[in-house]
Image (cartoon, one colour):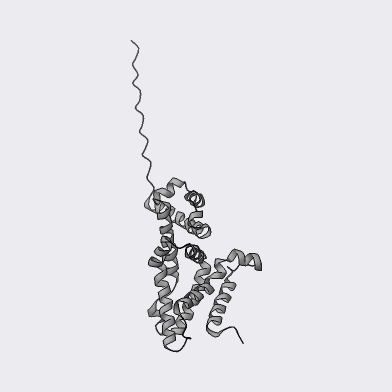
Length: 222
């Protein structure tokens, strides 16, 4: 009789390992960084999840795995942007409490210039959302911008009450300061196209901080 050959059982393939939490977190942060760049450059409507996926080196399905929608991605990207800025922006009152109100303002304005150069997306997002208005702007004000503006307003008013600063409307003055500190870097492509030099060089950033503080507190007349 012919010998019956029993086929060998196939060895089961080991299950594919699921991405680690660390890998997932790294991918999510990469997506957020790409989203910050594209939302600040193209605006909410001009940036697609397809473009963000391409810029972050993942499939669009991966973007939607980490963030349920484009709206959720925008909100998470804005949180990351402002968390970075607040972490770098030294507003510790205990550190600055021995300074006069005017010297505190000088420190904060100088730091705002440096931070705006490091994160030009800040000014671009504010211009985009500030000109279009709507629910996203209201969310930014409630979650991030309102407290930041209030900080400057409070210290401008204190300096005014001490007779150190002219009695001017505090909020328009705050907007003026933010524009002076951020605009060179917000419009860096324009600045470089006209002047032939990037404003992102360290010496340019330092010179801009010096000039903004000097002009705001001393004027530009001799």
